[in-house]
Amino acid sequence: MSDPLLHHGGNLTAARARFGEGNWLDLSTGINADAWPVPAALRADLAPLPGPAALATLEAAAACCFGTAPEHVCAVPGSEMGLRLLGMLLGGRACHLAPGYRTHGAIFADSMALAPDTPVPGNATLILANPNNPTGTLLLRETLEALLADRTAAGGWLVVDEAFADPHPDASIAPSAGDARRLIVFRSFGKFFGLAGIRLGFVLGPRTLLARYRRILGDWPIDATALAIGTAAYRDTAWIETTRIALPQRAEALDAVLRRHGLAPTGASPLFRLVEHPAAPALFERLAKAHILTRPFDYAPTWLRLGTPATGEALDRLDRALGHG
Image 1 (cartoon, helix red, strand yellow):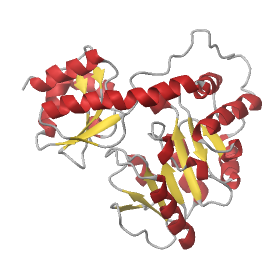
Image 2 (tube, rainbow, N blue to C red; image 1 turned 120 degrees about the vertical axis):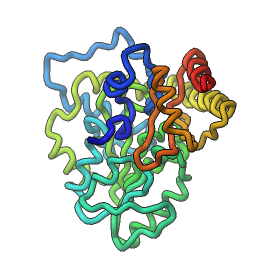
Image 3 (cartoon, rainbow, N blue to C red; image 1 turned 60 degrees about the vertical axis):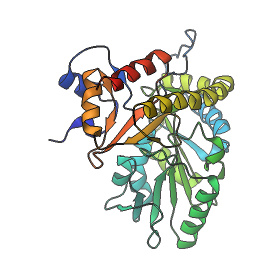
Image 4 (cartoon, one colour; image 1 turned 30 degrees about the vertical axis):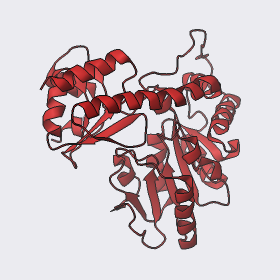
């Protein structure tokens, strides 16, 4: 049986089973550890079925944040589900950039892994994340537009997973989504807003594709709680702008701690950093014994990904554990 801690981040159940109960600091994901504060007065009416007007309101609020038109935005119960439905709805053959998000390789049957800068064969759909997970590599919007032009000329599609793009609005290709573009964009609510338990994501693309999603998902794809919280959060422009400033500052503080302990952080996403070190497996074990969970990788044993701590106290705890060699 494969190691569950090598499969994805956030697996505290497996971590507790192996390393014991305690006060765990989970740095194994790229989820914002300083979550959007859900107002105490925000109460969803859970008695009736969610109405279509509430769904339209959520999609409009999200579209405004993404810089695109609401008719090109479809809410889904988590971007993970949206990604997994795409192969069935789009068809054809596909390639996914590697290393990358594990789900990308499972969207299409027999999807081929491509290294960065490798030509995409024929009219295959190209799937990538921007920023990349786990490397944190960030592509400029101009680069994405060039990839889109290449796929369009070949009769293929460009699929961009922007789960970690909220801190990088200028790099997002979401504003280019439209009926005349062979472009599909996925956005995640839970990572930037720090509320991964709210299973909410979005597909952006041509209205014909979104109509297929809506037929599959049915009349009530998003529950009332997610509708209420998602709408309020996307409308909170002050919190969004403040967080876009705070996250890079916290990431720089993490970089300083890592470098002090001989670790070289890489990646442009302020939600996480990747380090490469020959002793990464031993470092993962040492931190886990101190009840600090990080993200190791089965396909890259020398890698370790660390989420950005939200507080100075959490960063100090990591600093002490790294120094306890």
